[in-house]
Length: 218
Image (tube, rainbow, N blue to C red; front, side, top):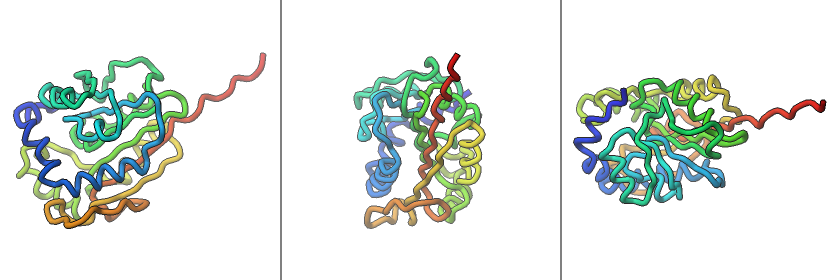
């Protein structure tokens, strides 16, 4: 079962973080944009309050927290209340699936990646933004997560673990960028998105669902 209680009870506080940490938020948006392909039918899973879907032009979202879904709807997002592990869509419904700071709250990351793969069209892209546990800042988040009403039950992952999940789900052409090299509350300028992972707190990874194999002529 999705752990929605903190988000239902503190949705406004969660949403306000993006205003209090505007430089970190804009840096994360910029990093996602660097790997976001042109698409016609995008979906954000774990759309939250719509802080990413809105600026990125994604009009459809999935969110298990009703309070967060209502905030996203106010930003013009069409939201279905459901879990990432059981998406209520037909196979090959979207050409892009995005998840941003969602995987640490999931019950089953592998199943959610398989579901993303299922609802993507052949050649479609899966883009995931997350906090890397094995960076210096990520370690601090892990150490102090009990102090956060949102993160106290979170399970942070490393970039290597998420790469393995991409591959296990059948995605190819994996690539990544990273950003946020100082604590968000101390940032004085936008953080550049640079290739790879290992030092930046916020990592964006992208994989592609392989094109369907051509059928042999009869």
